[in-house]
Image (cartoon, rainbow, N blue to C red; front, side, top):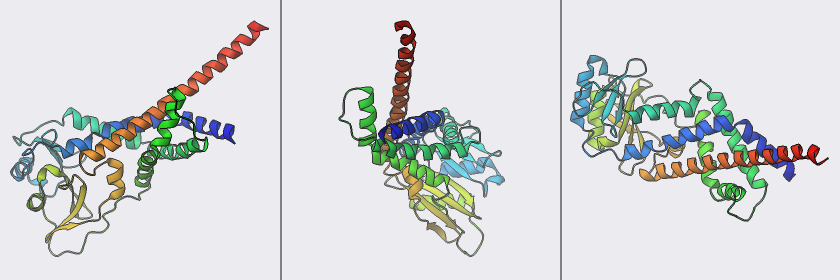
Length: 301
């Protein structure tokens, strides 16, 4: 079975090499985002600054979404098509910085390949989950300082982390991650974005605030808590109601224990990129050798 498994492993990798390269490299870029969010400069995001931004955005900000990027000192009010970005220090109009633009492009590439090809991302993720056990079925090989040796050793020693990343990504693509569900039955109107900012400030350092946005008629809040791990709250007139932690998304995005999650995702992305690159190089080298042998036969005859 080994020759068949080797061919199957090789051709699945070659067939999905380009989309896998895009997904893996964009994931590598995104692995830096949680660390930057967790390392927002102290005092860069405060209640006064966020309220000043909401005032500058005007009446339409009363129940609008608020996205905070403390690492670049900006906040965006509103959703797609009607979003305005402000400088947190001055509450004046601003443009999203290069880091925010890079993360936005990387996320679009990671999820849709920039061309509304989410189905291809899902298919590539399934292919990656097939490649990893196929590699194990090819058997253990003593580590050696060769291209083949590094390829095999990387797959064996990093296997648990390599499986966790695409597995959680596939779960998110299939809608098996966190879903806040229907908002609780609460008395009174939903709180405004200003009120939600004050609620969050009473319980958490606002430098960890990621976003506030309306979901299901009630504001939903996502932030990093004191441990650097994602927390979700539903904002009601009575206060913030904790929601179940979205562990599938937390593990996939690396938003746990601050820098630790980013480092793990970075290592996984580097190993996956290395496996893909060495696999393609091994195939290319083999193909060149076979072509060279075929070209020498007529000459020898």
